[in-house]
Amino acid sequence: MGMAQEGRKRLTADDWAAAALAALGDGGLAAVAVEPLATRLGATKGSFYWHFANRDALIQAALARWEELHTEAVIVSVEEVPDPAERLRLLFGAVLGGAERTRTEMALLATADHSLVAPVLNRVTERRIGYIAKLFGDLGLPPEAARSRGLLAYSAYLGHAQLAHATPGMLPRGVEAKAYVDHVMGALLPR
Image 1: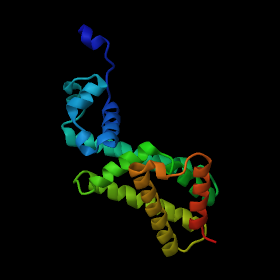
Image 2 (image 1 turned 90 degrees about the horizontal axis):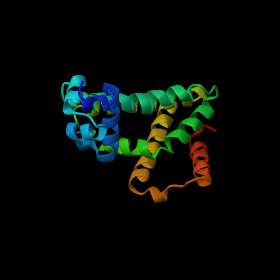
Image 3 (image 1 turned 120 degrees about the vertical axis):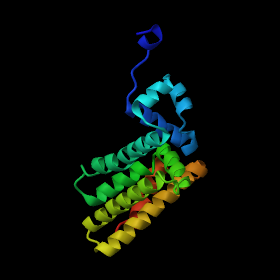
Image 4 (image 1 turned 45 degrees about the vertical axis):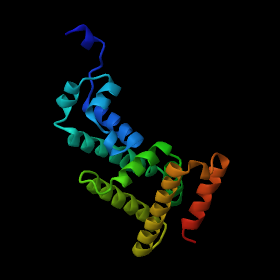
């Protein structure tokens, strides 16, 4: 083993996927490029090709990571709360506060017609709306009304994400942000 390799950490496929997801959030799908990522990671292109056959495989890994961290893990953490209204409040508080999440969300929405992004974006959107609809159903709404309310809530989130991305100064911060979440919840919860 040469001196150059002794100081380097052996990278995993997950390290590469995490770097690709960060690059996607910073600069869109075009920013997911092997050479700049290798430089960012202090690695060689050989390290990349040890884990991935090509750039598309890396994009797929980054998208899987996004789906897991920003959808499934969020749902798992919210499910720990027994009351469905509190789960909704926790969910909205979490998703309305993540600037990093909105950058990635906007980058993916901007490339929604890309052959690798489209199926993941569709699956994640359906999962998110379905989960929110389930929460509204748990609050007693019939399935059609719960689905409609879930779609409205998710649309509100996407609008919030767009504002956070394009004009972040328009959104409330600190104490006002909590009051804003309370207001959103008051508008969405069944009476």
